[in-house]
Image (cartoon, rainbow, N blue to C red; front, side):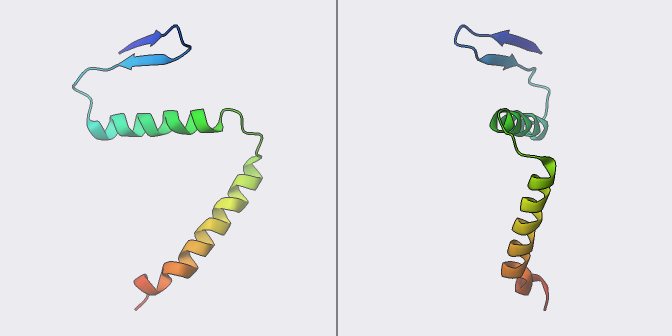
Length: 68
């Protein structure tokens, strides 16, 4: 693996072809998460409450698909 910082303040990562696409996708998703939340001032408690609300709303809209 080679990490290179470019002139425009970006980071380039070179990986060997032997790494599975699934694991590369997981790495990219985690990097996107870090980038998206880098400047967040949200508290973990607020995030947990929002996640619970989203999950509850999703379940209420989709439970008929699973409960027969």
